[in-house]
Length: 228
Image 1 (cartoon, one colour):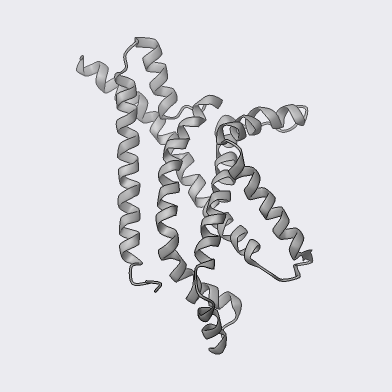
Image 2 (cartoon, helix red, strand yellow):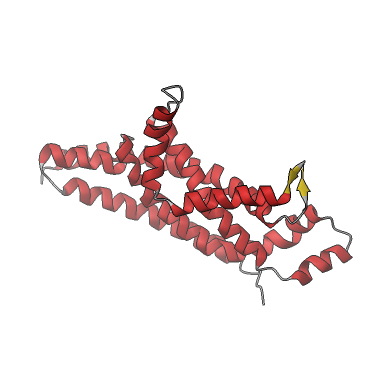
């Protein structure tokens, strides 16, 4: 294989890797806080929260997680990019990248909501009672007692979802986002050469390897929070 052709192909596909990483980091930066907020909202048993009936809030959050976890991400991408424009008569229109950001953030926040909710619920009631006996309010209890212990439980599924996120970014190609797979497909269609797909696969593997290593380090860091 011609070295110049190979280097040009790698450079072109690597341009798509930059877009893939943007979708990846934007999704994590916004979906993790949103997931934590939604998880706390689902766990809150107060009759009302800032004037909103607790049952209504939990129902809304339950419906949100059900819809986004129960429908394909690809369908959600089509709906955000094409469907909203049709429903609004053209008044709502997103660029391909913005449609990808919005869809991925809300989709992954729904999964993170359930991960965080499960992690928080796994902490025994004795922890809350001990914190209350020490005079801690609910916010301080969550910040200093519950969340640090829940992190140990949350990290493995969070790592798995992060790996899935890298692979799911390939779906952005269907709404013309120029990420890794779209650029690889362009080269393959133009040159009838599958080397572009091999290069794309290698880039995805490299990215997932880095994510795995990061989460392994995080798991070691929080290993002293052992729930027994």
